[in-house]
Length: 256
Image (cartoon, rainbow, N blue to C red):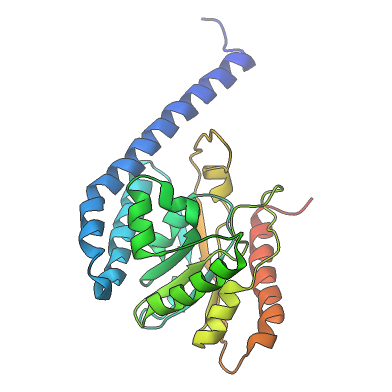
């Protein structure tokens, strides 16, 4: 039997990745379609929107288990389930959204308006969460106020302060926008920096991504109190959170 050449090994690896990506897509979509009727039932019941968290949790845990992506969630013990927070995370991959199915308490997402165009998922997301046109300053402000209102007293807020997946030099973050920090100060609730160091490798933000099987790590850092802070404190708070996440990312992927 002739030894496999490097070229053949590369082709076989790409073929495996393609088949694995197709399997992952079938699993992610299949579980969502199974859960969709339950999301649909919640839409008119605004007082019960926080229950969507439990469906998100089922989706995240079962999907990653079925595609054999191991998870390592650290720092959850720092979060009090009965309290509200603003979670601030780096954003390098669409997998970041699913990752918050592992949050310790019910969450409300603020996501880009283009998510609303995805069949079925867009309907669920736009009705149970908040969409924003990030290019429109007025809409960004309105979306933030809507999010604060929809949080009520039962949901924490998930925001990606980079404003989208904009980094051209993964895993380096781009500058943070103010929204998450203003929301935390306005509500006088703690901010929790969250680091997702690996999702950009598992599901890259490219036109035709191939999913790679790799451990998905998620780190919840110590909550940062905003008690007594005002809007003048936003720049310092923003810099503090950026530094925490950036340092954690580069523990795994050192800067060159």
